[in-house]
Image 1 (cartoon, rainbow, N blue to C red):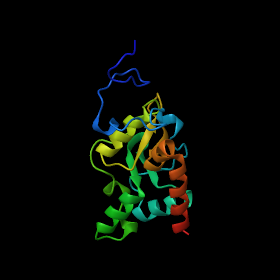
Image 2: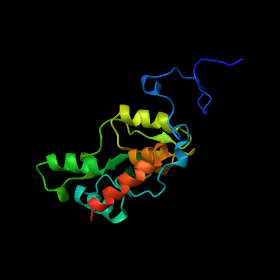
Image 3: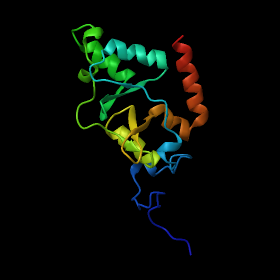
Length: 170
């Protein structure tokens, strides 16, 4: 006899179907975040200038920097944050500390063990392009970006997008 009802996530939770699941499950979306996150982390202080943050992003070929005060995670700043928030300030970028462009509120992060689809929904709900990923001790183990998510569920499309983005940056 076939059992019907909510599908079971690998985390062991039974969830009701959501509107975005009505079209089915995309391949890869039920993987743990640790399988798709970027492990290369660049950490900066909240006092780092927006200009220096932008330069670090270029130098390290990343679109997100983890912001921490010692061992305390304050959040993550993305190219989008630097471009939009930094551009709206009246001060020159070298005089604007990153803490002024960090998204407000409690820092958003996810666990390495989180299910990719759940992490992506949280990112969408909070309108974040990237989130720090924490290990079981609470230390930053990586970063999950929208491109990581796209690469997991649509590998061919993500590779094409990344190539186009890199070509535009030359």
